Length: 356
Picture 1 (cartoon, one colour):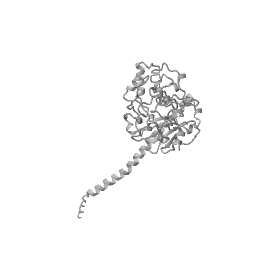
Picture 2: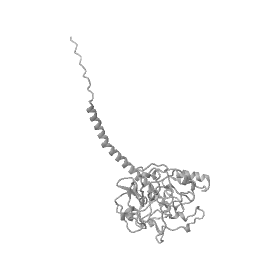
Picture 3: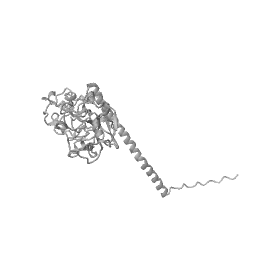
Picture 4: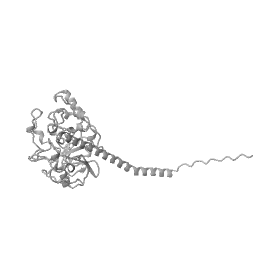
């Protein structure tokens, strides 16, 4: 019996250089097609997270209104910051961000310094902790993460050490102060210069009432200088009136402090600062030389100066997220009619319109 002949194994043919280049080109093409889709999906997720953050803050404001019968106050002015011993509402010098801490599960932060004299080292330590403890829901993930950021906070009247901290907590959202920057000289910053350097000589009867529209000092929004807005004060309806929204920022200032200039002061202080433009925005300022369109909400753009730092805006394409006074969140187009935008910011102009 003859043995079967052995089969010769065929040598494996190697890839040619041309075939290898073709494979690399196909992989590169697939990556090029997939990368924008991945980036788009990530931005969509960040936008949804941003919307959820605003929803949480809006719920905090509404819960505050349910508990205290009015929306949180906007604080006193940029020369003041939060103080756990100074009460709530118009008596609290700090911001609306600070006012809602107990209603967004941040009671521990709100209590820092409580029961301590502002002149003691213990209070100073507590205050420093407060100003350097970030809150994740204060930030839009398309812009920046929750951490302290460099600041340019001017002289504070009561907690002077804060201005020397290298970084403080900030926020990417702003309260709606209406369709007017100021009435009869009461506006961002104007209250800082006649207020005393301590709390001791302050008394409520001496304060200007900015809520009562019968006075010449009223503000048209829902959270502003020493405000105390009740549901009945929102005559146009809670679902038709802005409460909070994303604030315009210049992208080159997300992580660092920009040098001076009018357009640089919309993010130079901290989240706990009293009434000023870091934490408030308006839909128009009729007392200025700028037009309604100048206060149009806009996508974050480098180089935008005054009055851009007073406007609402966002890092997202197409539009920004706004919270209405009923706690609902709406996406508002950057192309919204300027007059409609103004109507939505005014709580009692009789123009109950939809943002979109």
